Amino acid sequence: MMSDSAYIGLGSNLASPSEQIKQALVELHAHHQICVQRCSHLYQSAPMGPKDQPDYVNAVCRLTTSLAPLELLDILQDIEQNHGRERIGEKWGPRTLDLDMLMFNELRLQSERLILPHYGMSQREFVLVPLFEIAPDLIMQDGQKLATWVSKCNLVGLKRLPGAVDFASIAA
Image (cartoon, rainbow, N blue to C red; front, top):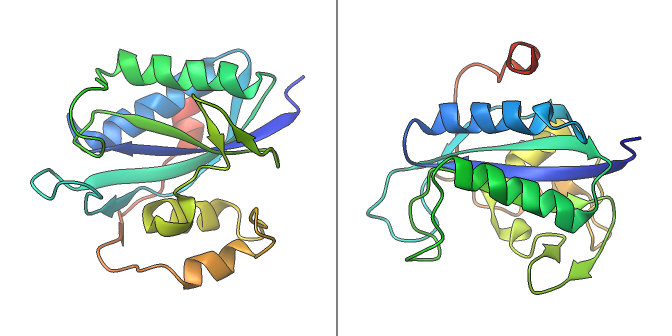
């Protein structure tokens, strides 16, 4: 039974970023212990790290799962590796695929491998805006509404890409 809920941030800026994200959604949904429930539009944003790299394409999805948080993290990292992700070089350098677990139920966790909720969410418009799109009533870990967080973030450089992610056809 898939009773746990998680929000996943998806990002890419190499090798057809939009397709990387769509394929990652297919792979997540195909896992027998994961069901992707909703996905935001795709958004284009400037890179957080070095500016001499392509813009990113980002999205957020909500899924249900029967996996424990670290098991889900293993699946996310396996999918990243299958897409050619290499964890070398600069922290915020270019990548084919980045899958970040943003929230897992209301769990607070701090381990070597995983911090929940994701430590950088409140400063990342490319996470907050897509998250707001699919979960506008979400209450964040500090007790504030997600809308309050979104109202405080800098939206300069964030652009919603045309056309919704047609999840019904992706999941088919």
